[in-house]
Length: 253
Image 1 (tube, rainbow, N blue to C red):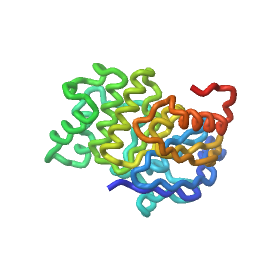
Image 2: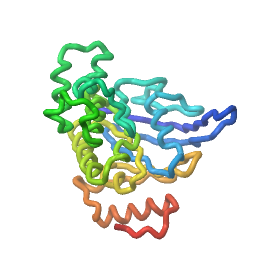
Image 3: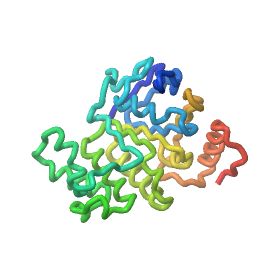
């Protein structure tokens, strides 16, 4: 069962040395079960802060966030976060890193089979006993995805997971993620600075203003999969998004 999400009039501020710093301003968004949402906006506008609130790592200063009509008050294993850095334990093998979630819950039955399943799913068969220092950046991020997927997430929260990868690995990982989402059907919330990444992956693109972030627009992206970057409709959407973000003079590819 996938997860619905309702962000209702959420505002948030950070306390910096006793001074409040507004980060989000009256953000409202409805996410249907199975949606793939991409959040775009200027650097530092509050995208990652919004993900932390959805994950239950922080509580909003105002407003409510509901998952399947229940208010989010803390972390939940059905809402899984994949961060920019894989943050693997260097002394644990690939299989042992992936098994962290089931171990923390005291699950022993079927753990080996569950690890083998997600290892195959992310294309790491044969690397189960490898240590993190023996992996490429893309492989390490695959381990992070597998570690999330073994928890059978109903909502997958991604904070710029491919931003530190080289361009070819990034394209490959985008395809991997899209295939996993289409197969498993979990709801996905992705923060990215890459407009093309959002266009190729997402069913809806949320464009945010500068901090304190407000939603400028929500764009429905109904182009069929697999998508091609030179699709004329995607090129037009790219130009529209860049204009909304105040970026002019950039030729459409």
